Length: 192
Image (cartoon, rainbow, N blue to C red; front, side, top):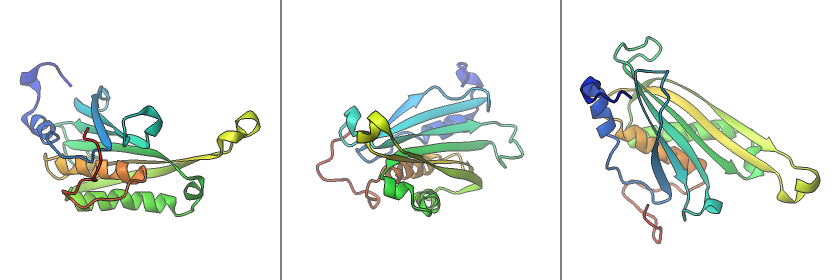
């Protein structure tokens, strides 16, 4: 993002402002991080950690949310904005080997976008699963599995708040948290 405040397009400013002030699950902690710089003239990025306690050993998953803005409206984007997300978490090896995991994880994203009311077009993405088998001295650690959802889309408006909330819901689902109805908090959870 340019450091010259006058050069920042008003639409990009409005989009960034729409990302503020949302109530999130207490298990989700967001942080602003340096965005990619060569993909679009204006960019912003957030990371999420899904962690019920904040202790490193309790980390359940995480992800990245990137906002790209190019007033020239690249043809592939079908608009001036593009959202790029990633959500990743360790899962039980039995779930990792389920042949439907990719379809289920993809449905988590579609459901999250629908629930949040996030309108979009030019949607694409993929789901990865990584299965690790351990041998020898590490055999006591047990097998491991990870799922990762990567997607991008063009939002229908500069109000990116619903897209942020959908991504947070995807991160929670990927990390195995029970879905909550809008406006409901987990009793006994610690605020972030």
